[in-house]
Structure formats: C-alpha cells, structure tokens
Image 1 (tube, rainbow, N blue to C red):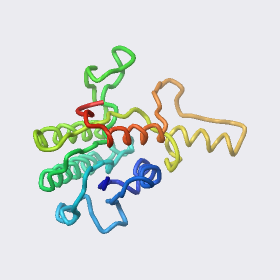
Image 2 (cartoon, rainbow, N blue to C red):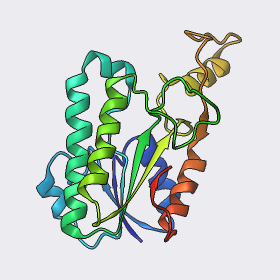
Image 3 (cartoon, rainbow, N blue to C red):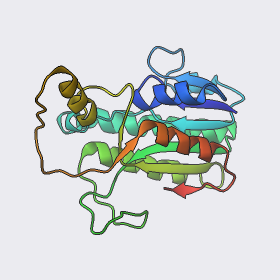
Image 4 (cartoon, helix red, strand yellow):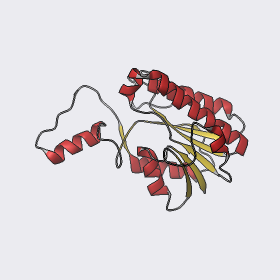
Length: 209
C-alpha cells in the first residue's frame, strides 16, 4: 500500500514509519518535510495514495488550556485539509487517530456507546475533527476513527507519565508523581500500530472504535 501519513515526526507517527514502513510505502507529512498539513495545495501535490492515516495534532492537554485557540485552529484545520484531500483524490480509506472522549466513565469497560464527556480544549478539538471527517467524507471515503486511550512507548516525550516514571527509576531509587488519584487505561504503541495494520488490510473495518 502507498500510505500518506500526517504527523509522521511525532510520537505515534515515528512508530508507524518504523514498524509499517518495512511493508508499505509511507509518504510523510510533518515538520521538516516538503508537504505542509496546514497548506492544502501542498497536500494536493501528492498523488497515487491508497490510504491516509491522520495522526497530526497538537496533543499536550495542559497546553490546550493555556492556548486553546491554536489547538482548535491546528487540529480542526488540519483535519479539514485531510478531508478535502481524500475527497479530491478519491481515497478509499482514512484512519483517524482520535483520543478518549468519555471523561469519568459511567461503567467499565467503556465501549463505543458510552456518553461523550469532553474535559479539555484538546479533547473537544479532536472530537469536532472526527465529526468533520465523517460528515465531509460521507459516501466518499471509508473513515475509521480510533478513540485511543493513553498510549505509551518508544519516542514518547519524558513529560508524559510512563516515560517520566521510567526515567526516574533508571536514574534514582525514588519515583515521584504529581497525583496518585487518577486512573487510566494504557495501550502500548506497538499494539496500536498492529491494530492499524489490521485495519489497513481489512475490507470491513468502518466507523468508530
């Protein structure tokens, strides 16, 4: 497959390139590449793509409270550009890497039918982007949205909790975290990339997972 990957230089993107690049041709769109996710015309210069994986986003939740405007602007505009690219190029499958939108769960395990409870500008911008992609590409492109729980693994920045803990454990005998109360479900990055590979090769994957 020839795959256009947005956000290829980020934590998730670098793992996708490393793990799926051995079997697929990946066209990278990220900082440092000639194609700019914020510039539709530069995207439209890319041809003969089979699948798009949209991973580009501003993601650090604390920053989204400080600078909500740029989170909304980048996450929504980049998704709109991806949607138009898929429409014009008649892309048959788009995989959107969304985030957990459910807040404090009413029941566990959380499933796709759980109520939505968006707690940050980041979550809200990602959820709105999902809505845009499904509505814009209705009857044009098969959109698969992965509402991912907390990811961890290779290339993740040290200010995220799992690498933060590992770094402390390697460097000292004490591990300190800011808060012991929050509970999260974690997904290893290689397992997430394996899921993407399954979706790439599936004729039936569709909708929200």
